[in-house]
Length: 405
Image (cartoon, rainbow, N blue to C red):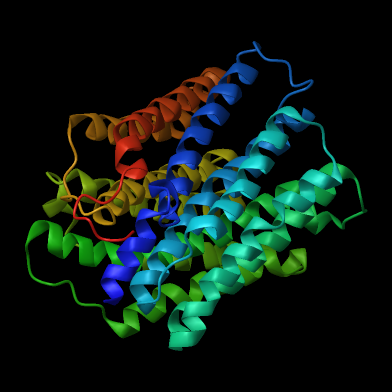
């Protein structure tokens, strides 16, 4: 009887708002296409920042890719995953539409309006609401191992508020809370989430996708990877004196990267080469490791620019992890087979090329830096256009097996 009642209620909800992954994965992908094309136009000199991009393209690019795009994917994923974790229905219908609406209004405002406290308030509402709907079922089921995601979303909201204070000049923040410093903090929060989620799902997905022996998780190794990652986040978040941070930051970056590399080496990467939904996950996790090592190298002797190191982490690590995850999650949660066609494989390859263009090409040929910005932005846009077109019916139509969700 409960299943019948649930199905009856489900039929009254627009399919797009039956679970959080649907609107957030789709709209965030579309938004990233628009954002990257505007970024390419800006660097190619064909778009004036006046009246666009919050009148501050550099601030806008960092803020919108971290909070607008990546934040939406994280929220969509967690509000969907919590239903599997707890067995309690995820937020849906009008409540989900309201959270999504706040996100959407903020994205449009930052694209075409000027800085104003009204847009800041709207942008600071949707994440705490998402955190509330994430926390309730976790607390009901007492799943304490997943509760840490809630304060991480709250932390991202606090960093978002500081971002806005900087662009509004609403307060005089100390140097360690500059926009650049806040970007690094936010990247580290997101990296922590990616590494934790990746470490949970990649071995499992690899085992299932390659039909091999289960990949066991060694408790000591898991702790060895996660403890320095949390310490690294604290080092970045707290106002550690420069004399200490100059030593502790590169050490923590290196230790974190090496521990995750050891973890990664147990995941049978070579067996995934013929499974697109797997090899991009492995590429992304390895890019996270390489990005952390390059950041350590930057802090030691500046042999690699901070921008290149960060974009190995953000485009190659976070971006590729996002594309691989949303491609798989969208299929699994709509009752479809976990297989992708040639177009999605092309999208995966295109995003890898965007990573190499934004990092390796610029490192080897610094005279082509601006061209690298433009080409990599276009390649990113192509990858997510392909995802949007292929997955639009997947995300906007009911599950193929008739189940709620």
